[in-house]
Image (cartoon, rainbow, N blue to C red):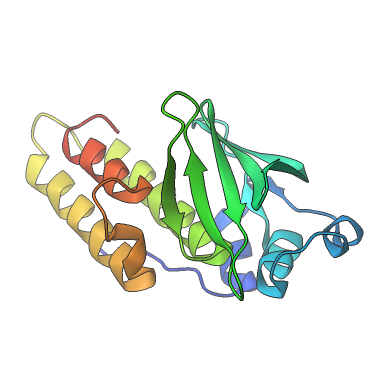
Length: 174
């Protein structure tokens, strides 16, 4: 199974199709100190608003704490852009534990991983869980391999966001 890896604005637009995406206003982003690449992605491509998941994204920026710009939520946890010297990374700030988990190296890589994960979600629904165990394992392995090629650091630590998602998928929870 091959997963489509979106890289350009057109790729993302083609992939998400009719799925609504949250785009941030350029005049608002002008006032915020984040990288040009992050601003461009949030204005031109945006983040998907999926009706059947726990992720939801904000339509305007706000600061969670110094250096953490709120993008949205995964359940009760904040998905944030952490300002860097040249690149902004995406992190998850957990409400209960008060910990911060690394998600992706850039907002564009985060957008790519959301598209990869959505492909997994749609494909796994078509597989009979009672008879398709090896197909599900193959799909998860393909997802992990493709993610590693797109942003190897997102899978560096077992305590980070995407390794936990993959672990939950392998356990049959997702």
